[in-house]
Length: 134
Image 1 (spheres, rainbow, N blue to C red):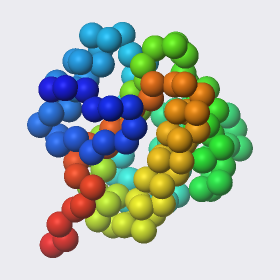
Image 2 (image 1 turned 135 degrees about the horizontal axis):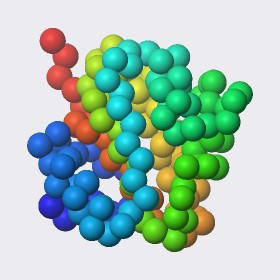
Image 3 (image 1 turned 45 degrees about the vertical axis):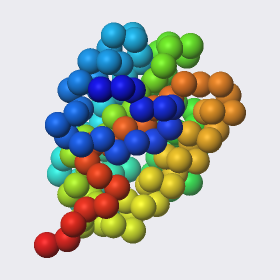
Image 4 (image 1 turned 135 degrees about the vertical axis):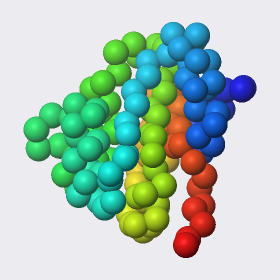
C-alpha cells in the first residue's frame, strides 16, 4: 500500500497492517492509540493523556488537547517521519459524532502547525470518515 501523503487519512482496517509495515520500514516514529471502549469526550481525552504521556494537567479539555498535540512530547526522533495511528474509531464516531468531528478538527489544526515546522507527520484513523448509522 502506498503511504498516504503527510496529513490526515482514514484507512480501512484491512489495510492497517500493511501501512504499519511501510512506516516501520521507513523507521518512522510510530505512536498507536486504541480508541476501543471510548464513547465520549472525557474518555477520549483520558485515553489520549494516558497513551501519549501528556504531562499532568494537560489534555483535560479541547484547548488543552490542541496545545498538547503541538508540543508532542512523545516525538522521539524529530527528523524521522511520524505516524500517529488511531485504531477502533467507529464506536466514538457513532456515539459522539460531534465530539469526533471536533477531535478531527483539532488533529487537522495540529497538522497545519507541524507542517509549518517542516515535520513529516501522518495521522491515520482506522475506518472511514463517515460511519453508517444503524
